Length: 182
Image (cartoon, rainbow, N blue to C red; front, side, top):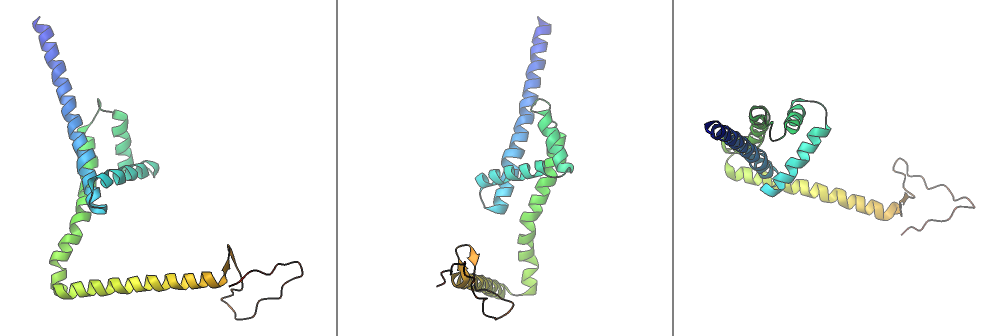
């Protein structure tokens, strides 16, 4: 009787230990890492989950390196063979450290080095001015492409456009159809 109670107690301790390991893995894999990825990309945990899944798929399809090897070992171990040292210590902590650096370096730089270089008001003006210049360059390139396409593009074929020389186009052959040009 005592032996059966002790055996049930050991079985329950094993289940509790497995559940605790699974809960720790769930928090790290489903909350911490996606939250950091979401904050880095879109300020949203739900999109962080999506981006994390995409990144895991890219890692698994990519070349062999330590992250792919660790993810394969974790996947093959399953819940019962979950190695917390491999999951948290060797996989999640380096990823969290990298994401933490990506999140903190711009903030720390903006609040320590940037005020030494220029006063905050001028930083705002420089940022605003450079953003406007970039926006105008993009708008002008789009306008140029639009004008070029309207003038020379008929369907999917470029006609009467020779940017290397300004010679007139060659005369049409007898069997060619004259393209419609606006």
